[in-house]
Image (tube, rainbow, N blue to C red; front, top):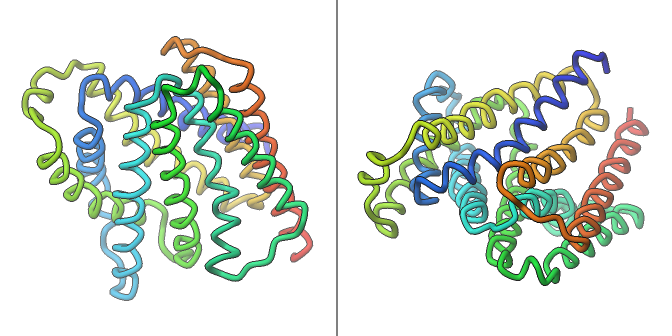
Length: 289
């Protein structure tokens, strides 16, 4: 990978890591469901040109839109809204990789070797260490929401694999089209005073909202797709581990998050397990070419 493309890969993960910080700041000014619905509304407007697809793709895109827009992102922002330690939930989000392996076995009858099983086990041990950290007891609800988000994301990854002919921004546009109206309606039912929150929101709150929508979903995803078009998956995916590290650093610097020994060890185990799984995927991909 060239130095410039390496810089892009690192920048993408800086954006994804800082998304947790921006979301935490924005959620101080908006209710979580309403925040997520507004986020998708901005994306619908921004990506409306990408909504046109052949008819055979409409049904799978609606399914992915429901699972991502309502499942992944609803649970993601509920987790961020409840979290006392943003870094912990950012690390927890990487459980989507072992979850995807498990679902691949259960739903696609894929086979995994002992080394991938070991990587999954290492990541799960790390998750347990974080969950049983006394300093994280207040974050258990947030971690559970993030675990649900990771599970939804893992399942959706399996569905998206079957849509390799659809551009990523088209998928993002359909996720927004499905998720936005449903989440705004859900907010209207379960939350209150949305107009008052809009009127009281500061420029910082609106900028945080726009950052999570534009920088994370449009800029970072497009840049990652740019890299995946030019390099093997095994060369690109290890960089995604950096997003959690940047989120932890940002949480300590900007949100007064606390680093504890179980969080550091548990986070290291999760990242090591995911890195091991990705390494085995890379070896398999190379062997297959």
